[in-house]
Image (cartoon, rainbow, N blue to C red; front, side):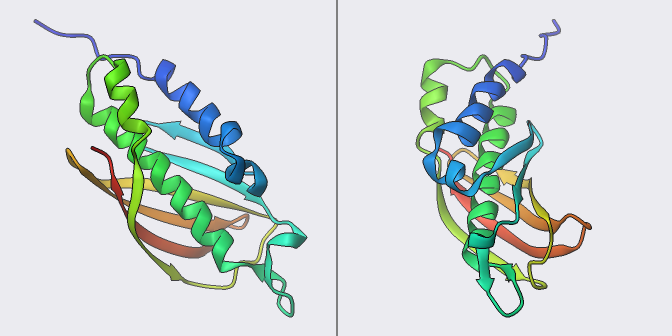
Length: 156
C-alpha cells in the first residue's frame, strides 16, 4: 500500500519563523530566511557598517561570516532531520529540534567579504540518528564565494 508523503511544509513554516524572528541573535544580525526546505536552507544578511571587520578594506567580519554559516548549518540539520524521519511530526519529534546544537565547524575564508548582501546556504552531507554533517557556503550579491565550511551538529 502506498503511503502519502507527509506535508512537512506546515512544520517548516513555524521553524522558519523561529529562526528569523524568535532568536534574538539572528534578529540582531538581520538574518532573513530565503528558503527552508527538506533539502537545505538559505539565509540572507545585508551588509551594515557595524559588520565591518577590517575598516581599511571595509570587509565583513569573520565572526559574522561564521555566525551566518552556523545558523544555516543548524537550519539544514533541522531540514535533514525532518527529511530523515519521513513520518508524522509529533511533539516528541519537535522536542528533538530544541536539542540540535553545533558540535564542530570548520570554515575556510576564501576571499574578503565585500558586497551589498550575502547569502548563506546549507546542504546535507549526511543525517544520522545522532549527528548531522552539512556543507555551508557564503556568497556575496555577485555570486562570489566568500567562505565555505563543514559543520557537525547533534540531532538526536
